[in-house]
Image (tube, rainbow, N blue to C red; front, side, top):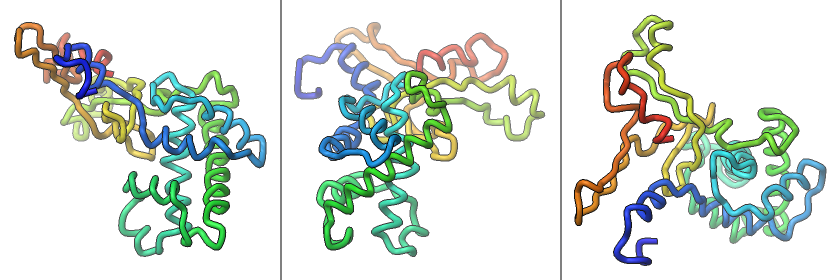
Length: 239
């Protein structure tokens, strides 16, 4: 993107800052192409991901399956199989490139038949993830959407010490979100509830040829005081 279409227009920068395409998703989906599911859940999961572009759009059903698989099933099972217990206790699985490389180039740590063992791990964890999403969002894949789990919410800094009913009135959100910690639009989330806890709360594009054409968005609004019209007025646009 940066090397094409010079000079860049504001729209190009806007699209890049809000790009929710996941490169890890594209790489892992390629590993699934030759595989065949061993049960109904596995077959359904493979069918859902087979022609998927890797976009973690908030309305995407394949995106929610992939992220539940990657975050809650694939990484943890891979570490349980390959990493010493002391390492698993030290840090949660987080080295994305390292994980992808191990899966793309299986070695003796998987056993005497590394590729077969890798494929079995991919299939079993993917089927488990499919059943997990069914439990969360129901059996109808048409109702699945990444934004139904992945969300953004803004709390007032004093919410923790305010009376509960007052703190609830200060809360802005939740809003469905696309992306993840590995997309250009960084929306890293905590695995416990998929709430966004990392990323850009403020975005800015400066047009140096005409500063008045510059654009920005802040969250949750331009006011730091609950009850004012500008307290949460930009959050939905940001999301």
